[in-house]
Image (tube, rainbow, N blue to C red):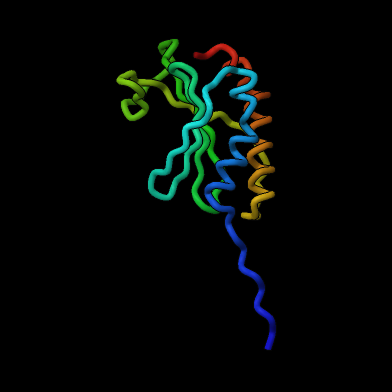
Length: 135
C-alpha cells in the first residue's frame, strides 16, 4: 500500500502574528508607530500598527496572502473617507498600496514570513514618505 503524503500545515495564528511583528518592526523602531494591536474577526487575522490617527493594517485569512491597508485622516478633496473606517469617532480614509510582490504559493511558515518580509520592504520603499509624514 502506498504511503500517504503528509498534509500541508498552515502556520498557527500565533506564528503568523509573530512573523508579522518581526517583518514590520521598522514601523515601531523607525517611524514611531505603537506596538501592535492584534485582532481576529471571523476567519480574518489582523495586526495593526497605530500612530495618532494613522494605521498600517496587515490582514490575512488561512492560506491567503496578507493584505496591507493604510488608514489616515483626509488631507485633500481627493481623499474619500468611509464611515466604516472610523476610529475614536473620527472618519478616516483607507488605501491599499500596490506593492507588486511575487506570489508565494506554499502555505508553510517560512514562505509566509518571506512573503511578509517582501511586503514590508515594498511598503517601506513605496510608502516611506507617507510613513514618515503621517500621524
